[in-house]
Image (cartoon, rainbow, N blue to C red; front, side):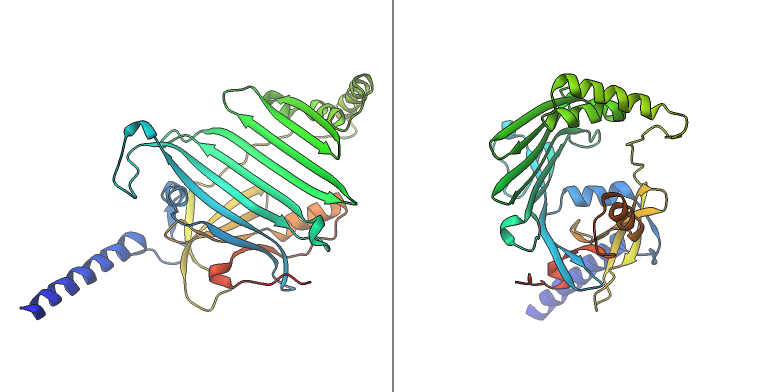
Length: 304
């Protein structure tokens, strides 16, 4: 009788494992398309945080690290529920914490935090955004922060340099207006209002010049409607994943690799984008910048 019971349990386990494989991958060869909504819901409901290292993959150099964690916030008014279950979702939160870009001296590392809150499915609209950077350089502490709420019509930006604190509010409608953005930047830099207004007018007239032939800014990113089945690159094992190609601008695709549990395993920054930033900002950036999940790629140590 024991053998019969064990055989039944084993058969049930094997059948359920086969069904799970069918749901995830059956009939899906490499390159097969998957509805982006399926992958997005997996990301939002992932149970574990992803510990990512920022790596110059060609040189094997560790550039920084961060923790990515999705959180599901349930409605506390629902009362006590079964542990591990979320009866009614109040909001989803995507967080980047303990973000750090390494400098030659650890004291001068750039520290960053990010939090994005989203309403429940199916509407899935942003409700709040928080972004912060800080760094200490030459015994002076620099801090930059952005706070935005969908219920407001503006975002709040603060800049602290030592004991000097500047704050400004930028209406959302001004995000498409380079002249007004420049004016807000000058105000944050401590430029007097009269001088900032004059400089804004000059920039506005300059942008209208026919000689520049500047196209209207477009901050909209067209998110893909599909993900694709792929193999996780750079590892010895054959691991099937979802790959999402996010277009920044034409011919610049950020590639994100996600497993079936919604955990981010790898993010590749396109070389052409790195090269553009390097030339524009006159920075000496490595050609290959990749965010790698240390549980799959191993943990690199910071060079002393």
